[in-house]
Amino acid sequence: MKFLGVFFITSLVHLGLADVFNPSPSQFPDWTKYTKFNPEIYIQLKRLGSPVLSPNKKQVVYSQSKYNKTDNTNKRNLRWVDITKGFSSAIDLTSFTDKQNDNQPIWLDDSTVAFLAVRGSQALNVFTVSTVDGK
Image (cartoon, rainbow, N blue to C red; front, side):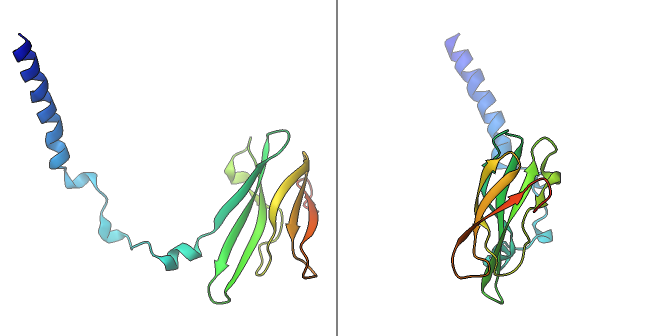
């Protein structure tokens, strides 16, 4: 009886593995429609970083950056998301312009974010922005 049980289990294993070694081509995407992901494409992507949850846990501020290959510059701004409304509610808190680096956001209260940036001088300064009116 034990032999019959072992034989039955090994038969099921072989039937299950049959599809692993001979998959149907319809299970895979048509790779002719896609191009190879390379460094040129990678540097054109916007990168998200430094997510910070608000004290009331209903909002998130994060940085967004993008590299400009022709000018060899990086631009970074801050974006705000209302978690209760979803990612489609994301807006720019600071402008997304070349040679601007707004980073390291931190919440001061439920509607004010402080961040570091170089603007108007060579020194790194602390700035604030309101999530209510963007000022």
